[in-house]
Amino acid sequence: MRPVRKQPQPKNTARELAILNAIAEELNSAAGVRQALERTLARVTKLLGLRAGWVWLLDHETQAFYHAASQHLPPYLEEPVRMAGSWCTCIDEFRAGALTPKNIDVIECSRLQPAVKRKATHLTQGLRYHASIPLYSQDKPVGIMNVTGPAWRKLSADELRVLSTIGYYVGVTVERARLSADAAKAARSEERARIAREIHDTLAQGLTAIALQVEGALHQLKADPEKARHRLERALAVSRESLEEARRSVLGLRGSPLGGQPLAEALSGLGRSFTSETGVRVNVLARGRAALPPEVEAELFRIAGEALANVRKHARAKSVAISLRAGPKAVTMSLADDGRGIAMPRRSSPGHGIVGMTERARLVGGALRIQSRAGKGTRVHVTVPLDGA
Image (cartoon, rainbow, N blue to C red; front, top):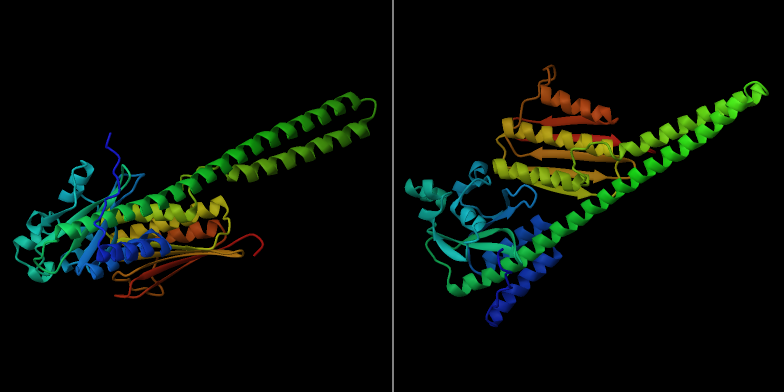
């Protein structure tokens, strides 16, 4: 078992304390993990006089690495395919528990090495080294932060020590967000268990009432047919009420592609997997806390999956923004990529993917709209009215 990692202890210099305080403020004020990482990289590069930085995070469910944030990437790494979560030297060492804060010559960096060998300095910006900082929360592996100085400069031992402390702060922040998401998932699972108990109670009570009515009717069939008929009608009414109640409850337990997660969390997980596989950054922004019917969540999640599949196959995009807004009257979801876009002739037949997304939206009473222009990206927008709208 990996030993518990303690917080690095920096020297108490005024400059180091000022840097760490600034980073702590950014981490505490950020609205989410992505914003926290981007603000941290911006601060780190500015305060330490560095040029660029990027962060890999480890998805705790899939154990795959994904590109979570970056600041002024070298042109060679701006192509998404080069930032997929595939094997590289740093990731390999990190998985083995052997990565320590250090400078790495870019000729040893498996991602930059092809450009370095070609002497394509316009793509590497003449970088000679990058520093890799492992991110942990106690003994739990979280990810890797890479930063680069101007051109050939190595980071000093003092800078690496400060970065190690920053890495500790970042690791704790990411793990805290993960634990919060897990708590929400656990609460959702408990809700499903509550619904299961309700189904059991509803069926048991309903069947008991039906049995009593039928039993009474059997005793009165000859002596008082009218009372017997009344009892049978009551039994029929109770059976219909119980069946409808059971159907409503079962909707909450029906198999769902979300794996028990709220829709926003499930979309974030989908985005992390997509980024790990393709290198295309996915940003999920959720607003509103209105409870959504399980069937609406499931279809929106499947529409998002189909839209991302289209991005993978056709868009040549570098990033995708997913926006989810849940209000009292309707829920809207949009996915916008910055890819090459598609021409949308008015009379052309839509592809199977578009047809499938449209049908899924209609299944829950919604509507789907696609906007795209060549060279301007594509936007998929779904609106689903909620009960009472």
